[in-house]
Length: 242
Ligand code: GLN
Image 1: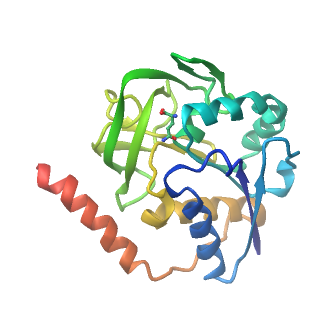
Image 2 (image 1 turned 90 degrees about the horizontal axis):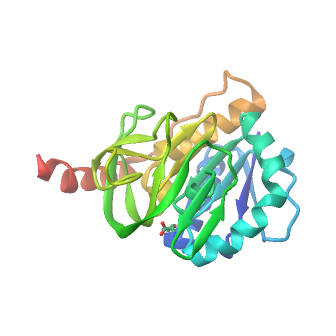
C-alpha cells in the first residue's frame, strides 16, 4: 500500500512547524510498512489531484495567504472534484480559512477555494493561546496552539470539536474546526499531527480506505510519549480550570 501526500505551497504556508505534520504522516505510514511519498507544490505548479491521497495546506500570515489566494482559482475546480469524491484534506489555520468561501480582512478580501460552505472575517484582536478540544471522532482530546486574527463561521457544518480551553473558530460558538466529507480544517498548530497521533491516523485511515477498501485497519503504534504529552496539556489547561 502507498500513500501520496500533496503539500500545497510549503514555501508560503508553513507557520508553526507545519512541516512536522508531513513528517508525522510519512513516519506513521512507514512505521507500519505503508509506502509514503510527499509532493510539494509551488504556486505555479499544475496539480494532478488524481495522484494524491492526502492534501495538506498549512498556516500562513495574511500577506502570504493573499499571494496564495490569487492562484487558487486555477486549481479550484479540480480541488473541488477531489473533495466531492471523498479525497482527504487537512487544512490548518491559514490553510483552513482558505478552504472556505472567503477571508475578509481590513487589507482586502481573499477569495477562498469554496470547498466547504464557510467563511472567515478578521476580528479586532488576535486569538492566541493553547487550545484543547473534545472531538467525537476520538477518545483522546485534541491539543494545540492557536494564533489567528480571523473568525471562522462554519454554518451548519460539523465542527471538529468542542472547545475545552481556548477560543476556537470565532471565540464565541464554543466550537473549533470543521469536518466535511474527508476534509478536516482546524486552527490548531503546534504542529497538529505529532501532538495528536489519533488525528494523523484518522487521515491515513480515511485515505487508505478510499484507495484500498473499507475493511482496511491500521496496526497500532507505541504512542505512549505522544499520549503523555497530550495528557500533560489536558491536565494543565483543562483540569486545572475545573
Ligand atoms: N493569517 C490568518 C489569521 O491571522 C491565519 C494565521 C495562521 O495561519 N496562524 O487569521
